[in-house]
Length: 315
Image 1 (cartoon, rainbow, N blue to C red):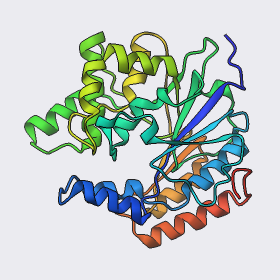
Image 2: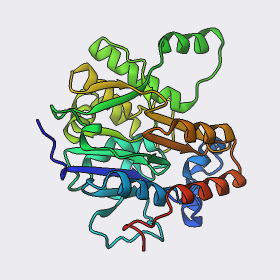
Image 3: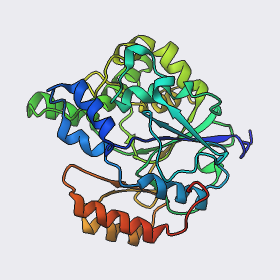
Image 4: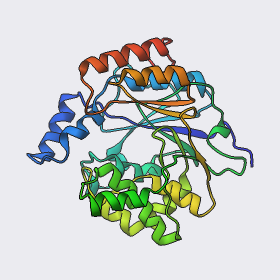
C-alpha cells in the first residue's frame, strides 16, 4: 500500500518553561513537593529549539501535511500562526479534567489521537529533535502502511533491570520505570519482552493503533496513570504503542546505529565533534541536568549556524 505523501502529519510537544505564568502554575501545583524538580526542570527550558527543528523539517521533509504544536496555553512569539500548516493545540482541549493540570508528558502522549483532524499517519517529535538530511514518507512508513519502529538495541535489559533493582538496590529514574512498565505490560499480554529503547527522535504512529491500545488493550492501566499530573513510578511510556505494533506484526523493527540517530548532550564538546563526524539522519540536542546557561548559549549559536535560513513558519 502506497502512503499518500499528503496525508502525514507531524506533532510537536512544546512548552515554554521560561514563562513566568507557567512557572507559577507549576509551582502552585507542586506546593512544596520535590517531585524530581531539579532533574525535570531541564525538560521545560526553552532555547528556541523548536524554531530550528521546524527549519530542519522545512528543509528535509517539506512533504509533511500539517504541523500540530501541542502546548499548555502558550505559543512561541516568533511563530507565524497564520501559516496554514501550523495548528496550535491547547492540551486543555484534549485532556480530561481529571488529568489537569498536566506536567507529565507520559500522560499527554496517550491523548494524541484526540487531536482534531490529526491524520491516521502521524509523526511525533520533541522540540530538541532535528533532521539532518532529506527523508521521505517511506523513511517512516513501509509499503504496507505500517510504521517503521526505530529502537536502540539494548540486550539483556530485563536482566540489568533486575540486577540494579534487586541486587544493587539502586533506584531507577522515573523515565526508565515508564519504559519498563510498558515493556512488562506487553510481555504479560503478548508473551514477548522488547529490549529495544526509543531512539529519542522523530517516531511514526498510526492514530487508530494509539486509540486501540489506550482505549481497549491497556485501557485500565492507562486510565490509572492519567491521574499522574507529574511523572510517577506507574507511568507508561508511549513506546507501548510501538511494542504492541511489533507484537501484532503491525510494525517494522529497525535497530538504529549512530549513523541513523545520534543523541547529543549539549554540555559535551566531544558529542558535537561526533555529530559532525558521523553526520546522522536524525539527531537530538539534549539539555541535561549537567548543562548550564553557557552550554545553552553555545547550543543556540550552533543551531543558528546549522540552520541559518528562516523558515516559512516564522514571522
